[in-house]
Image 1: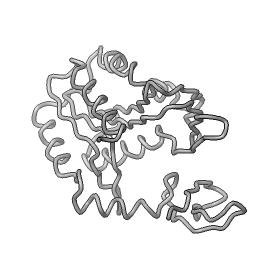
Image 2: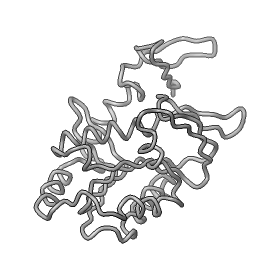
Image 3: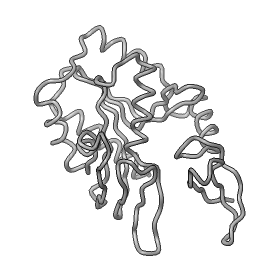
Image 4: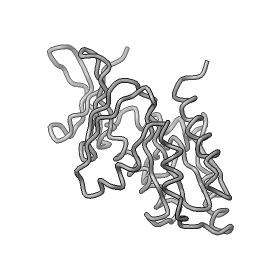
Length: 227
């Protein structure tokens, strides 16, 4: 049986394909983009004739708290069950920058979205310098199609056929699935902080052992020790 996140990514891809906004379209899922000496895994990348769509998919229930400027967000299921995760808007910015460098694009060529499940309740504040753009790019899946229509109502960047094929060829070279690149990516990120990329260090606390970021106290990311 497939994981829920797989079905959620497929639904996001279907909504892009069925939006009717694009004369040329190629969708990539779970691809690894070169990013310096590492790779960035992107949930959904849609190459269109108008721009490159980069989508971070979050199939979360519960209530989501955060802001556009905070590194970590919280998802609350109950008073006793809550989890911390990396700000998906910042995560997508990292992905977009990696794609700009790898594909030799301009920032204007890319549009980013962070799409959450309809099971979630979003309590996210926007007060940073890019608040208008970031707030437009954050939505639940039931609003996603409408956001796409709004974004491309007046046109877009317009990649011509040769530029579309150039970008498509580069994205086709990115590792997906279970190849060697995927194994190297998993190995690289398993010992890294999801917030800042620092090394994780085994620490000892009053409630047991855990992994903490080497950049503490500036970075407060933690990860449970699994056996």
